[in-house]
Length: 411
Image 1 (cartoon, helix red, strand yellow):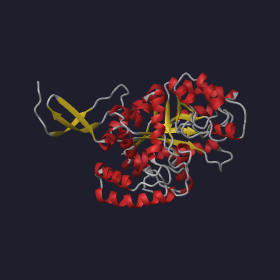
Image 2: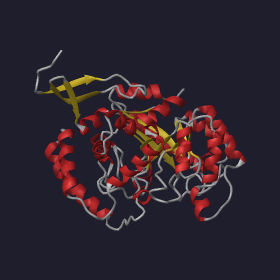
Image 3: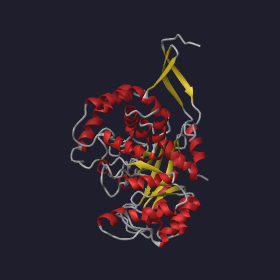
Image 4: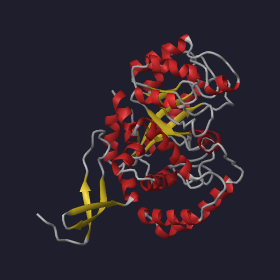
């Protein structure tokens, strides 16, 4: 039957979960109904707030513990907090359980205090926040409109050579472990030590036991920071998907923290996931961080005025912010387009199903100009839309890909 309507309608469409079951929300779509033709034009910002957005690595607990920042305030000196996450449309944050270098011993006890703090947040902010341990808990919380936290550990030194302490981490909710940080440990050799210091070796005998135990528990192996020799041993040993929670592409920016093409292919072959790191040093081989702080300060100051004007209307606010960012580009610093290049590269190399966002916010990093803090995730969605990604592809990148992996190991 022919359709003779020639007006624009606003439709609210009730989406059910796709194959990855990550779409329990609704989306408003501009639909042009013409004769014999239906063309859907998606507002990228509406799509963003409708999608489940996941960030697989954030170090906010470090400034909280070391500098007294508050997670429930709009801190002027942190890149993330509950306020910024809400504006940014984030639904799920993996919190990095990390021991700063200043602590030379007592790592496990320090980690227990970090987890204690997360459990306090779970109680104190239970009306809008919850820490989840599996996929079903996450989807239930999302459908209740709650912001979700997952615990991820960074640096295997924290288990102090003990499988029993690894078990305790899992029992308390930790769902991935980065086997090393920049320094090597009882598990294996780090990327920094292997690349810059020439330290040979991969996984140590204890490290092989750790990998086997993590597979048994359903704890994801995170190879960000891991030396390449140990990386390939993990790929060989692991029966579960392997992830890189916060790494970028070596071919675009040759840094030891980034992944080679062969490593990216190997992670994909396990059914795994790569969260692209926002650190401009890992994105841009010609980066100069000298002026990034002043660029960010200018953007934040000007955009605060825009935010005040639009209040809680996040869609209109984001359109106005994006217009401002587009009109006030600078040749200095690093453009967000370079971050999108890293996402593009992984997609073209291994497909759409293995890449996502692993910001590394509050990990003492400088980020692309337009991603000055965690309120800026919608900018990434707009950029993906402008690059020609479909709605389904954008949803996968924003969170669906990680949720697929998280579901596969959930018990």
